Image 1 (spheres, rainbow, N blue to C red):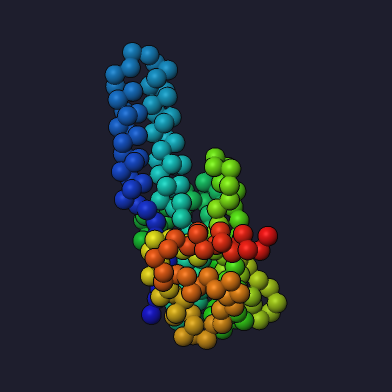
Image 2: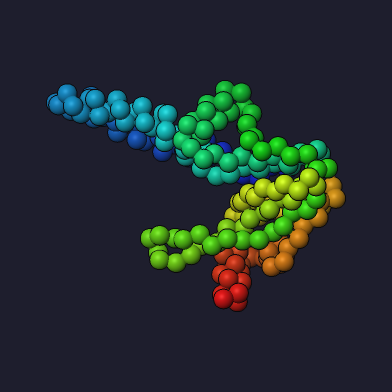
Length: 193
């Protein structure tokens, strides 16, 4: 069995990119100025090699199977571009983090406040901190969004495989409720102050 949470947004990224490329071609074909032609070609280059990959891989993706927990985290546009073109031609996603399930001691479920710059307030991300049997650890965001069923199924599968979840704030209990998770996390943060 294999559970995947998140996926590349190929469809929407191609649609948005096609619209912007059409506008760039319009600039090239109907502009009387030579500089606009150069801007149009530069815009097409930026769309194909920067915007398109960044849109397709704007979310983190994680997967769990019988033996491994795999996770993507693209820090730079170059990594997103490489992963985008690789997945486009091979239909496989490169996971940067690949951990054997039998090496995991437990997963701590917590959250972090993220400044929402334009709104002058904080948003909240759910964080899974994976503690390993060798003493090392790493954290990732399990992307708890509207498609919570994917996350719940992956968590249940991990529990079946013997992975212990330490959920001090009872965040996992809130996943199957209709209320946005951000409201619950905001309530927790307010109670902690």
